[in-house]
Image (cartoon, rainbow, N blue to C red; front, side):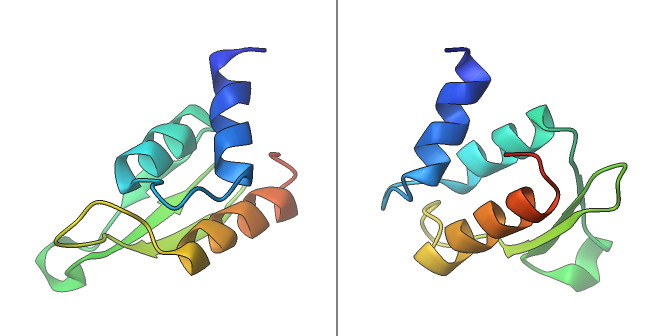
Length: 84
């Protein structure tokens, strides 16, 4: 099993300690790039790939841990885009 496959499996398990940095790294490996509108976007971030699949997140703060609904949204969007 490759490192990417292991990262996808970890995401699918919906761990309670899944971080924004882990999500960003995985999405980058799947061909997404991070997009935010500059200073006016605040903590809102959008990840977009060449197929125009879009995943919107709020950067968690003060901790780096994603909320369960955010993890669920990431999984659903990746399944819709047939990436997992």
